[in-house]
Length: 425
Image (cartoon, rainbow, N blue to C red; front, top):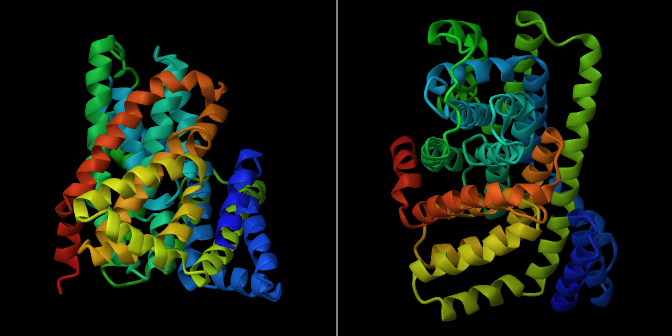
């Protein structure tokens, strides 16, 4: 049954059927072959999304869309530009830094791509950067949206692998800041080499003025993350607080959100949330069937026999996840693979929180690798270019993230030091 399910899913992918439908169809085929009651599909799909932590997903998506419309994103860009915009290559560095700040609220890389990209991609092009480079930079920087907490993939991993979401969030700061710093260093070196960005400081506000204008926007991640780690509210409750705060700031303080905008914001958020929830429901049914068929246990035993050490296990898993991330949406991959791989990682003595960060960082690469990189399609939409034109400028960014992934994988202290300080046993 499991072989037929996997073959059906691969065939659907080859026919360019959407990920959610491909997973769902393969699960239905598995039920039919196994002569099981079709009511199982309804029950398991409902159980997959009937989990309180998943309520954070639509709220964080809604918060990101409100920030984009309410002027919060633009003020964060000006604030980041006031810090790093004065050096050669300062505008690309501003893109990375803004995505890091925006990521501390939105939890979604696609939301980050649209919210920041609509501002910075035209600005980069205006300052003489190639359109393909600007789009590649934005797509890569937005990946930080799922690494720096709060993060929707981290919520999904926590639910799937039964790991504390709070611990995952605090562990994400080390890798997120490290990858952000690596990207900023790379773009600075590359701009120096190419001679780009000598006039990036034009129109830059002073740090004091930019901080004053962005004050309410900068308070948002402080309130959200401070509330989570201060024990005031849970990560799920924090998502609702983020929506409420963004709405107050956008409507009453900055006054850039009008009544007519709310319908557009809600519609966009509902569509994005529905897509993710549909994937989760179908992936949950698929995971239930392959678990009942004994596939996770068989894979676990096989990995233990073939990969004899934690180092080899991490290398093998990273290679597999990199390939899988190119073809399967991040949320679906985490829901299907986390219950399979996390127990094996624990067997090898790898902390499940550390392994969660390895999975999230690796699968986040899938957002910027063809053929199904969602960030690439979002950046292409904003920049109005075709995907194939981005590949040349995209490769160096992918290599930088790969190097960072190896560091995250083999230096667990990068993820766990802060976690151990906050969650002292």
